[in-house]
Image (cartoon, rainbow, N blue to C red; front, side, top):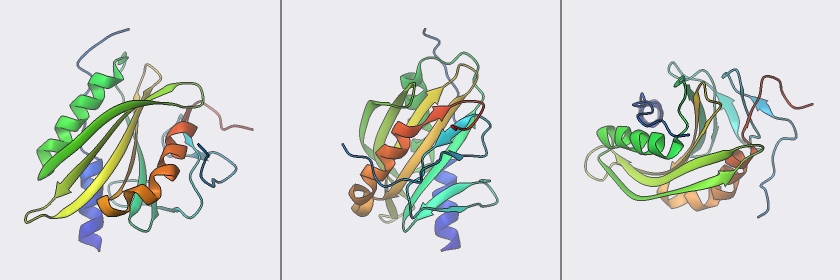
Length: 179
């Protein structure tokens, strides 16, 4: 289990290549207050049932069954082309994954910003390995790109989709939590 968690974590925390281009339903049941993540400016509604945990590589993330929600920050000043950033991030996944497929991109309206999304299947390990489905959201305040990675095994992803979309649409970049 520890090896599985390490592989899963490593796949989500790949160092992103940075920004190479410079261009100008019903919500799931959620905790009523924003959860301040260890990042200084990102706040998310984390759905009920997700347990806060940590690892050697990640200070704070959330798990429920086989699903995880991880937020990271990449200090890329002036990155306004989140689509290009997401494509670069996908290239990083392709370096570690055995296979990446069924890639789709989109946009989710969050609290006061748009979140660029990238959704895809990927496999870790040989001989079919661990088959995961991920939807990653990218948003920026002009000083950093914040990455929200929501993933689970491919065969259970749809049961978590509504929760993940709630998380992405709740994203808020701010210096102080909501009152």
